[in-house]
Image (cartoon, rainbow, N blue to C red; front, side, top):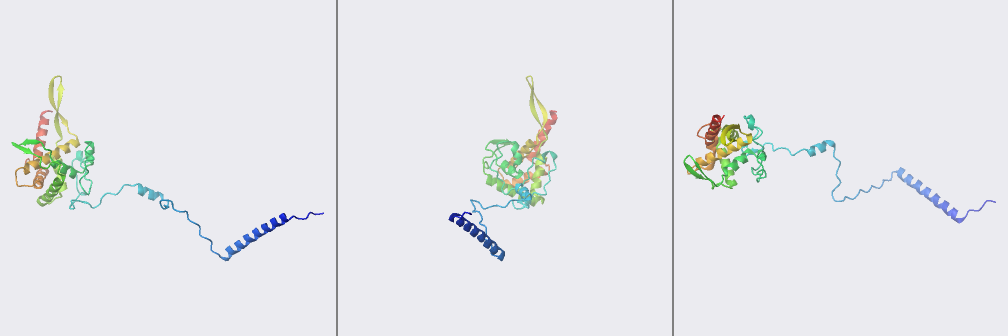
Length: 268
């Protein structure tokens, strides 16, 4: 005789039958065109979700910031047409465009890092002479007036560039570069001891020292021209740069360069 089904088996069959009917009803609704529920987006934690960058975008993001195109020094003078003819000084005269010529002395700790400073800022720094007294041409000159006053030196350089353009009709930065090239000596002497005897020997000068020598003497020549005269420091600096650019002996920088090279020729 077959066994009768229990109530538990009957209830389990009913529930299974109901589940199958529910699935059929859901599939029928989807076929009729009932819209699907939108999927929930994950909540943003902190920053918004970013799109993945393509390899080209990654390359562009890794590049450095572009240079300042169309920038003019003091709003007037361009740097793109400046030419350095001396091959020994090409890598040492920095003509990088800057918005303000003030690097807060971040490269002053090492003499090698001076190449990173713009040549115009180095001229401004050279005008700020130290407070020592110097005797030049029978005159004892004090230089305490401009020591540490960079704003005054900045304005004097700006005035000098305007005066150079009025007198020569050239780009004053090109005149400055030419003056540095002409007033930078190529050799000097050093002392060497042989036993108890000291002797002077001619040696070549490094490019960095050549520029330092030229800038120091150009600023000193401008100081001599402005000392006890009606000329301002800007006018005196303009006259000194023009004379040095033309290799005139009236320039103190050219006179000192010729003297150093003459002594070196005699010590060869």
